[in-house]
Amino acid sequence: MSGKWGRVLDTLFDNYVFVLLILAQAALTQFGVANALSTGMVGILLCAAGLGLQRSARIDPWIAVPMAAYLALGMMSSYVTSGNTVQGYPSTHVIFLAVYFLMACMDGGELRLLKRLNALWAGCAAAVSLGMFLLQALSGTAGRLGGLLHNPNALGIFLAVGWFAITACLEEGGEEDALSRVLRHLEPLVLATLALTLSMGSFVAMAAGILVLLAEKKRRASWREVFDYGCQVLAKASLCFAAGILMYFTARQTRIPWFCLFLLAWLLALAASWETFERFLRTCRRAAIGLSGGGIAVAAAAVVIRPSALATFAERIEMMENGLGYILFHPVLGLGPGQWRSWNMFDGDKYFGTWHIHNFLIHIGVELGLIAMAALAVIVLRHFRKTGAPAAAAFVVHNLMDTSFFYCGITTLTLVSAGEPRKGGKSLGRTATRVVFALLMAHFVWCCVYMICTYFL
Image (cartoon, rainbow, N blue to C red; front, side):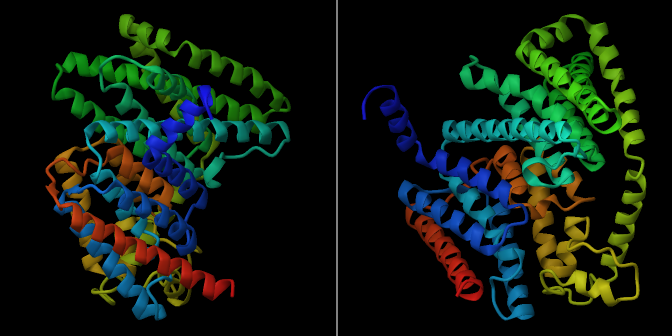
């Protein structure tokens, strides 16, 4: 094939690892809380790509070793509980290690490109989810938006992480290219779609990420510059959140849901002129301060629309207290993956009717043991000592009160957006890297064989 499409195909083949990683990210997002078969098929492709690279990985031992320990202990817990290493979420979480090692095989320029493509996927997912909301609004079935993830809280933190990923890419500096311009125009769509989820936990997590973003800004700017920058960020978020809240209110509380189309037209016009709006905020300080203050009104509107959020938060505190009551029952390997729900059902305490405690550290401590919980804590602490990326801050805060850690697509989005495996890392060597990918591939093949034999034959 020759001509334009031939050049496109040549580019795709030359960058097949990036194509596979973004397709894998899209698939994992669709899988939600994935099973071993779905992650196994994706993992096989990623490991094959890793073996094809024939490179040495440069990893941070304080990240890779605790991650491997967490996975090993999780599968040991699965074996003790169910008699095999495949049942439960630890076998699916091996996909995180595969993605991490692929990132560790990339140089700085390649990793930067991957992060930008990852941010692009988040923006496209937001646009598709927004389209889904409009279809629901016109059919009279609109509610809190779950979008591509089919869960409002999961979509909320997915978009919050995606927005921080886009922000990081846009603030890298240098000459702006076509991809940067696309990301810039996607930013308001991501923020407005996030508002449609009405996920209070995601809003709180986003606020935590913004605080980290401002702290990073303070390292190289004065207090006045940080204040102005913060007002600009909050002004953009407030305006887009207001658009999302108005769309939700129109679709749910009025008899004219088709008016959402006018709001969409306004949002698209805002996205098209986003660069002009950003320049306006930079040059007109009072407008930025005023619009940022409008965020209080937007937050109040969200609370009025969803008053049950406070009761939900109180229930999650009760859930954490219940989980802490089990954390020393089996301190080494825990109760086993998926077992807390069963224990909670018969313990005489309040039954919460969910598979995961809404605090990922407590949940892992209860089901996989204190060593696995400590391994995750080491990963979190090491990451923030190295980089402290706002996307990671939002993700961690959200997972202290929700369950997005168990959605593989959200965790891999955060891993790619915030991960820096080569920073402070050590080289494994080409042979050792190939051995790691071979072992990971063997695991994914075994997962696929086990699931097919158990459920399809």
